[in-house]
Amino acid sequence: MKQQLKISYVTPYDASDVHNWSGTGYYIAQALIRQQVQLEYVGNLPFEFESSFLSRLRRKYYTNYSSKGFMPERESSVAKGYANAILQRVSLDTDVVFSSGSIPIAFLKTNKKKVFYTDATFASMVNYYPDFTNLSGHTIRQGNWLEEKALKNCDLAIYSSNWAAESAINDYHIERDKVKVVPFGANLISSMSLDDIEKLLESKNRKECRLLFLGVDWERKGGDIALQVARYLHEHSIPVHLDIIGINHPLELPVYATNHGFISKSTPEGEQKIKEFLSKAHFLLLPTREEAFGIVFCEASSFGLPSVTTKTGGVTTAVRDNVNGMTFALQASPEEYAVYIAHLFNDFNAYKKLAISSFKEYESRLNWDVAGKTIVNHIKELF
Image (tube, rainbow, N blue to C red; front, side):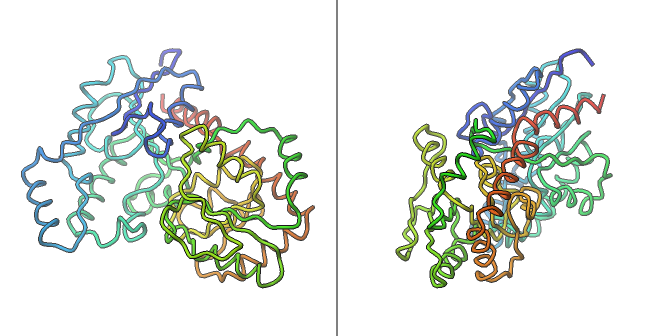
């Protein structure tokens, strides 16, 4: 291998644009670039679904005559189209074809090393996320087939969580040595130091517990449960306020909760507002029902903000109990969350210890610099 690693970064979208995939593809690229690799963007891959007559026929059938879900992006014609486009556009001197998902790798035939980095397998998402529920038998078979092809065809499969990695190993019988776990980082630039976090903690309101709900899907992210937790605290004489960010539809809220609507962190103004909420809050409260990873937990940790959430999907890789927050069982009652929050709010020394530990988790494990360095080290081991 030559002295400087050259990576061709393939994505169906434009990864140089921070507005795509919530900025994650952009931050992955920047993380790799900071590792002194030569990065070649191969983005906006053509979606060649309509090139297949059978695919068109299936879409017509499932759109007009079936109640089952159909996912055109899981059709082999799309994966083959991606592979053909990659072969035409990747430079001859590249060392690695690196994808932000498995599908572009499935049919890719090249002597270059093939690596993908993502947050879930197809099998782990079926009947888990709403969009993957009630799928047709054809889509399930096709999705699993493409996933298995990608895993067998790649040299390295990197996932953001243990949950996803174990699915690759157990559901697709892929050798464990081929699978690595590298947590995502925070899609919010924070330049805070430990001293800054300690000063921030001292400035926090100790008379009112500020809870922050940050998510765009009220039901999936457990918004009703967050509201019940706030209600329990309020009814048990603990001054509380729940700030809600990301929800644009009307919510019936008590006086101790405020819906601030969707705030885009892709604008300087929006990013500053979100940083202010992260700074003022005592806890990120997100009792999510389904979650492949949860970059918001990294962002909370970057502000020394403990996360209170659930043991589901990839969350337990992002949030470690008593290190940067606490994860509760999906069936946990609002009271269980509230008792935990109240205990820490009333014991500032214990809360401060957890908050500092949360920031250290961000510094050591949940940032893009660490992710980039780890990914590049794993790639170099292939040569």
